[in-house]
Length: 112
Length: 115
Image (cartoon, rainbow over all chains, first blue to last red; front, side, top):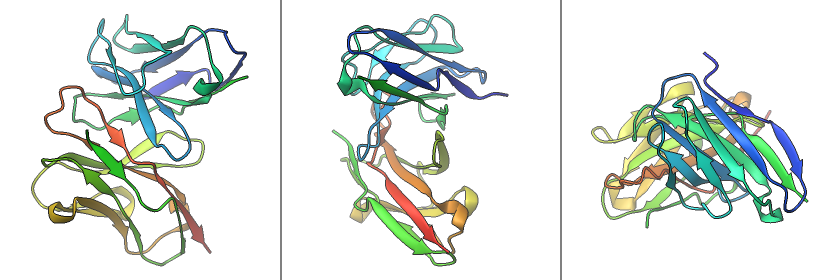
């Protein structure tokens, strides 16, 4: 079991560029989440999904879009990157709403 | 809205000493409470959780936490710290009537262990 994997691990973008972060899980979890981590602020939820084909906004959704076309994958898109989106992005998945969330290793994104 | 406060940004303890990391939450009813640990360059790993029942919960790696409703606290403890415990620790809460699945994290406490 690979658990939760994220690609890429590192990325540098210029302002205005777009990119997609891929999250994959092999635990057959229904729930998947995207967080961003900034110093002193813990993790903040960007978007989440409660099942294939469904997505919902979290605490800080502006500037991001997501898709869950397959149960095992959850994609996070930045259409026009801004320096404020420089952060470490974590994907997580869980079996149920209150279940343990399993986290990927993170993607460090820098927007210049 | 629910919120989680970890008052200590950094804590340094000597190896073998006891540890207590503080966590306070703001929510009207009993929330579901979690402690996660993040080692450098890694994702988060669940240490323990509290949903109901016994207010003292045991977790992995020798950690325990106590839920105190009167103080709105869920402090994490370990009787004897090991050098490998150096990491960042996050307290988190889900409100038990929140249909939105939002796990709210505190700002984290970075633990350093002196030899």
